[in-house]
Length: 502
Image (tube, rainbow, N blue to C red; front, top):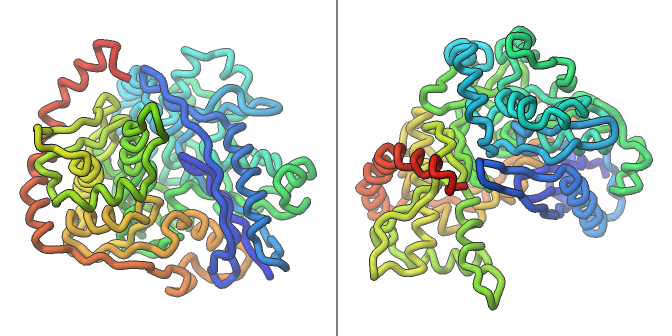
């Protein structure tokens, strides 16, 4: 039976999935890796960890796969806007992740030199500290020997795994459009901008449309992964593009939400104008001629993971998610008056501020652990309501939800109540990027005529209708939440300037 092997290199782990021609997910497996943070906005991962986790996930996958499976092609998806220095033989040091905010001074210098309006005209987006453009300049100043050892700068975790599999040094337009290095109008590298900033365009990877053939699995990679030698490797796509296809939103007109470690609200567009003033990003769609407009949050489900770790005791491991969900269900909507700001790593939509941080407001002597857990879920959902406002999404329309956080019935209901809209949870919501990547591969192989092969490819496992009484609670609290960041903005900056805040 013909299948696509889709590998998604996410923020917390590598997922491998076998997807049948009819869209059915035959088997999947996940292996995790750590993220390393440090003062000054440092957020890094080790590319070798991505490879090791991919190999572990693939070994698990083959053990669970049905007999008679034939892998027609391999395609990858993964986190975008990474900065990965690739030398002759391997990565040169750790990868700087999208949420790394150390390059604030460089971002300010670039904006002064080029001008914010010109940067937006070329790249389609505002370019802050999270852009590869700024991080490249940071490396040139603070790690010149690492940069000098690089032969290529890769831009997504999936591109590194593709290199390990077949040797290609490549990128897709969706991922490239997040970096500040791509001219969004032509879907080519912004050579004039790079020349103005004295950045060497020769270090950039080759651009290929998602689904294009970029090589075949080599013997060494086959031995490590179990993928047969010679299996075609197709150009992958950044997780935003893969998820957009995987939830059935490749065609314009459908809004969806992704609740993973990071998250977003997004929709495909036939045409769009940049909206950087709202914190909205305009990104190249996997299908040429289309765009995706997305309002992203830097930390979404990662807020609950932080709380889970923070609740660990010296005598035991952190509580599991089932326990956290049970606690959240015990608290009433509004969490006893406790509000949570979900800006653990700063924010980029609807405002951009690398100095913003998380916090609780309204804790009293009556506050319970259940209130705190629910407030983290609600605070994240408040942020999603702000994203909808930024995108101009009308309230009440049904929204598809994907990502690992969508597996929480409590959280899905909170989002339905917060947005006053039915929330349809995609089947196997954590597998949406893998499904989308497989559909892109299937179209490239001639299996499908479009990126929306049919409704049967996008099943829904549950629908949560808004509860009117809860909607009223959140409507009263939302103006308070919306006022917190503006009131605290200067204080966040002051905290960072103390050189104590991470």
